[in-house]
Image (cartoon, rainbow, N blue to C red; front, side, top):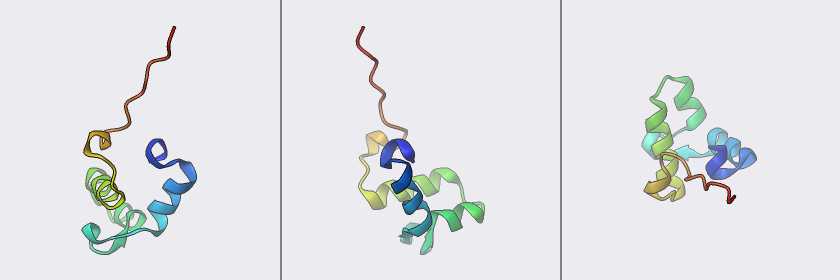
Length: 65
């Protein structure tokens, strides 16, 4: 979450964004209820327009030598 959204905004998304794909619950409520974390992450990605190629994490660039 922090890699995609930054630490502060990631926490806002987890706590405050109500996701229809999760039964009109927040990610925090879904996680506490035991929902699959992959399903929660996918719902967050879809709701926020994260490109599918980043659903498994941002590509880290190797430092130039």
